[in-house]
Length: 208
Image (cartoon, rainbow, N blue to C red; front, side, top):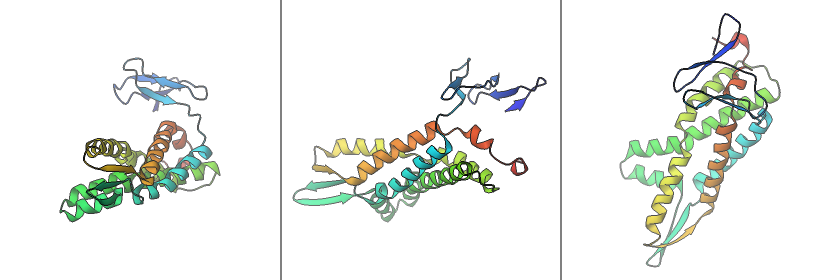
């Protein structure tokens, strides 16, 4: 964003670079680009305190989603369970180190750090705490959002599940329920997170 000679705030579309004068929005309103129709900015109806509650819930769900079995599979009288962490370890032991690291980072590390950073930033803003760490926290949120790919792994799991149904008896586990809830809450967090309003809370002496 920038200021023109009339002291109006200008905002550029991230997709087509069209400059627009930023208007004041009502709570929950969304401003879209007149050229390409993409979202420019919005006035989120989710307060920092509500965002704090959402991120805390997601962080709690992250652990059972990774540790509890996604499903149990019975084939020829033998039953095996599989969780996301077990699948990652199996890929690692098979020698696919890079793939295992990528799965672990994008499904566990990146979502955890992103949610933790946003949780801390929401806590700082909600209670009007003064800290120079707010700027760094928001930078981590912006960067790690692109690496959090929970939806991709859920779709991959569903595709594999459809193929396994004809080969074995499948029973869905608690881990899958937690993972679906985590994905829904994570989607809500990303939808309601208004980075502009958060960055406006960063102390002026911390901006460089």
